[in-house]
Image 1 (cartoon, rainbow, N blue to C red):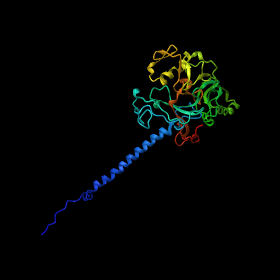
Image 2 (spheres, rainbow, N blue to C red):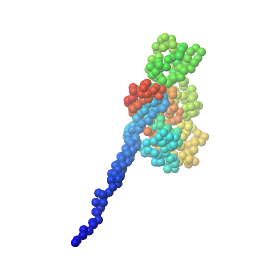
Image 3 (tube, rainbow, N blue to C red):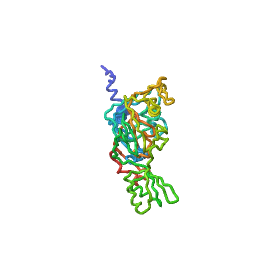
Image 4 (cartoon, rainbow, N blue to C red):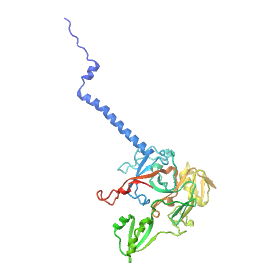
Length: 384
């Protein structure tokens, strides 16, 4: 009698007869891999978008009031001036200087392996553009330097001069189509209710008690100052004076800190903004103006550049003249008497420019609660 010979199960049968637990594990694994891939794709697209198109920044100070206020969240277009290549690759993406919510550096800075910045340029910077750039005097890699926002007042090759708080480029008065602010001294008999200042849009002021009343030091536009007229009419305000420095009234805080120039906030220059290919004599005056640019931004090896006794030395040789290799810009804040800008620290190299501020996408008043007017809806919109 023939006996049935047991047959070994096939590979497919072994798979079919596997435990439910192993089936579940195998089904989960492809799903998990897909989610991880999707997450990495989102991160990659976010990095690409931030580098090529738009990046968000927060305004911390009043140097651009009344165009931009502290608490404004702005969008900066990279398309206008072209995105830059990074100078360091040892940096955690989507961070600036610190890892989120920590005090840990998000980068590893090794000066010996810093890369040169290249820009895919599209449009050029224009007068009165609101420009976001990296603060030139920082010593970190370019893209990690502190971001600043100012308005462009001088283009490469132009001669910039400020006379009576008015900005001229190549002797042409730049038009003011934005709410520029100045410092005013307001004398009053009594204190002014803070609600009144809020009503007329003045938020930056300090009050000093005097024997005869008060002195308010405030920053406001001429239009806002006109709104104080009712208080003058009733005699509460007894005097309004706008700060106006006299010509040749030297301010040692300004760049290049040379007393013989007699420059101040309201009278500055004339000064030539360096341009690629521009050749200038290296007189003691020009060495003070441009020597640091040559050393820090032009030279491949800054140790070979020496500034001594009003002279510029490169490789030990005194330079009678110098031809610039880069373009530079002159930036001034809209809050004219309360802005640390090119009048204080000099020129902005072209490779330090991040982009153009194009819109306020959110604005928060830090002095108010969330359900008490914290969101300033009226400020959301485009930037002029």
